[in-house]
Image (cartoon, rainbow, N blue to C red):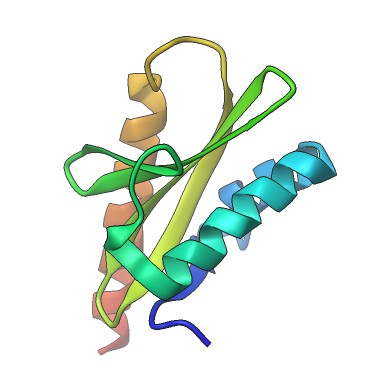
Length: 119
């Protein structure tokens, strides 16, 4: 059991964008991503390049490569040593698309708003 808890961000409609992305890619790529998720559970923000990278404004990405394909799953750290996986994509350009980062920020804002309502 790791120090950190890793969860999928869930939209109001119950869908989980990062989980849906993982279900759409090859099993080998998923295995690589889950091996990094295990590292995150144990080491949190100590996981660095090439497996995890800080992007901006509290958003990070898991990096995985398999047979020329590059997958990314974005995440953020929440209260209570929780890591929330927001969205994923297959990378085609050298830089992470700004729209993907904005989506992760939007999901984080929604997650934090709904968590605050629970209290």
